[in-house]
Image 1 (tube, rainbow, N blue to C red):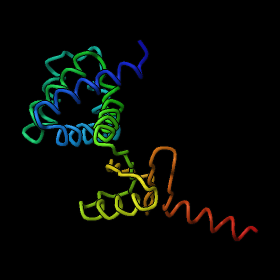
Image 2 (cartoon, rainbow, N blue to C red; image 1 turned 30 degrees about the vertical axis):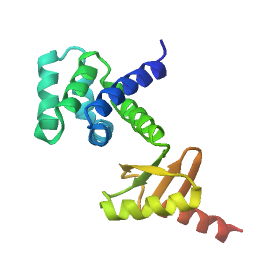
Image 3 (cartoon, helix red, strand yellow; image 1 turned 90 degrees about the vertical axis):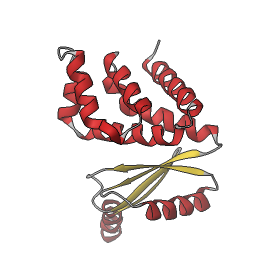
Image 4 (spheres, one colour; image 1 turned 30 degrees about the horizontal axis):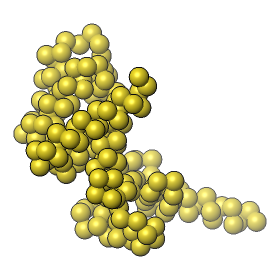
Length: 178
């Protein structure tokens, strides 16, 4: 079984359980947040993917990380994934779950990359603008990415809208050369 198939199966299973428990939106959001934390913290990634670290210690790390901020379902799912030795797949599973959830409501996922955390109102305005531009019904996946110096980079499917300062400076540099 390929890694993509395994990730898709995890996402499908989590989707079915979370939807059945009426917690789909919350579990989706929590897993995306955990995926971002996993990607941005070498220490967390190393600890949860270390095969020599005892399972009890990994469970304690997951419980410390999530505590009462996450649903029992999310904590159990993350513990299961880590316990199965698939901690490195958490971000991909979170993305696959978001895509599955969006597709179930006839939406697509719009990944919005920014250097700073955005408030809900700003995300809502961005999604509205992206929906008008793409003609699609969208669901937001916001990623805080320090490499985006300013502005945003939005991706819907294969369409990338780069409104970053880096892109603008590059365009200006090209214009000045011409």
